Image: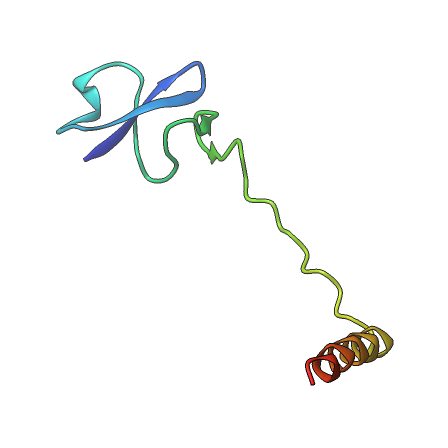
Length: 78
């Protein structure tokens, strides 16, 4: 089974063992990875993913201005 080595509430290693009695500080690795926090019951990612909002959609006026600029560039090509 996979087990995390926990030191001071932090997962410091993940190893393969036959039993959690193999050494002190082992906890079954049901989730998490090195660097995660463990409070005795729950694993917590110290660096959770940050939700990034997509940029706002351009307005109709902005799209028309872009279209006009592109049209001018195309016309300049001859």
